[in-house]
Image 1 (cartoon, rainbow, N blue to C red):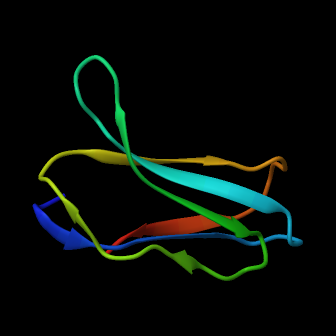
Image 2: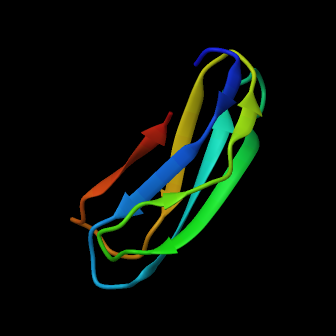
Length: 76
């Protein structure tokens, strides 16, 4: 990702079960958490506030109790 202000968005298609998604910056040793979102799996996306991200590689990790659901999201 390029350095600058970006916003993180995430959603899961489902039946209103709660989920948590977090953004981690990949660094040597231990990945550091940058931002988190909480929402419900109801087919809509949740958007986080714009945030300054440094240049580098990032990953999205989510916790959701059900399998086989469609997840979507990213950075803009």
